[in-house]
Image 1: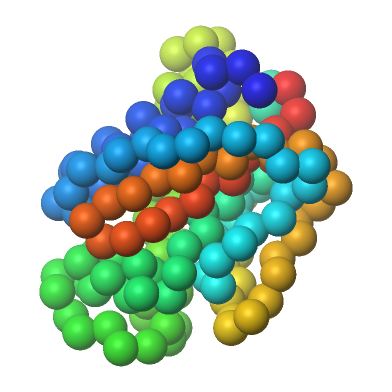
Image 2: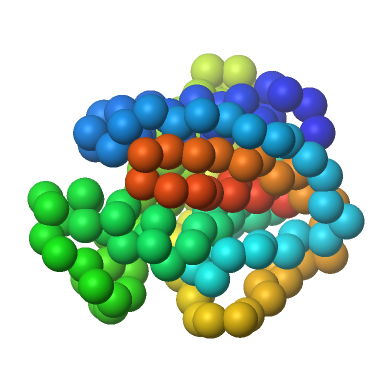
Length: 153
């Protein structure tokens, strides 16, 4: 996948984390997957349509998800993934994809986003679709995140 489609998402994750006071994001490996499979036990998924079609997912371990939800809820102690923390994580994904959509519009590309879906559970394997996917490993002070881009351009 061309960097012009990956970078808006990486930039958006970094920008949103910075604006929310969640710290800096470091980009690790960027690699291809045969299918859209998420490896961690909590995944937020959002659809994109327009000039760019497909799905974007942020996948993270529970510990990372709890820390992010806690920070987004002004330091409230998050000990389990409940309705409130799921809402916060969905909003984070909305903000990231919304900012990426804005960046795409500056390239004259339309990227409309759907509301996020959050799925989670221990020992689960989330297979979103049979589309080639670009995965980006991200790390932050709050933990590891995998950004998955299953896009058709």
